[in-house]
Length: 212
Image (cartoon, rainbow, N blue to C red; front, side, top):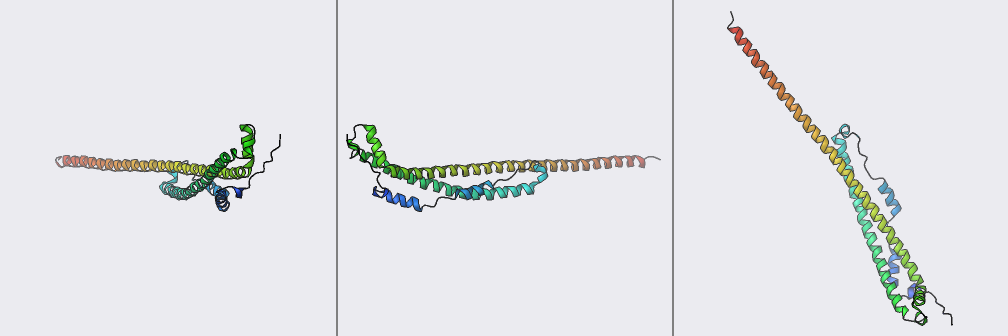
């Protein structure tokens, strides 16, 4: 049996591949390390005693959370674009690989091999360089998808913190309203007591006027 020598096809010899290679080579992937450091620095610590902290402190925290959410939303937007671009490149490569595999399966040297397994192995060997490049792009896309999920999680955590601080503000406002109601009630009670006392004094004075 004659041994068939299979030499991997160079990338530049594959139809439609050069455009994708150039796009991936020149593509500027996000600086995940720097952005992760920035994300790790976000977040607001909740006060154990929000009443002691006061409304001004809590309102300041709401403002800080809003600013952080705006920044993280910007990062998320970039992350989604980054992920989508890499996903598109990977899909393009997957289509090219399938096309090349199917085409070469019915061409020499694969066609002359005795069974399907050996023919498929020959095609895979021919497309080793394409498969290697496609794996690199797939890895970049997977990393981009992971980063997007990390950013989404950070944004979700800030949303949760924002709700907690808002609830704290609501509680304090309710306490202030209750205190104001009680204060007003106390003032009303005091006024009523004074009126009652004055009425009693007036009655006593009238009795004294008719006593000789």
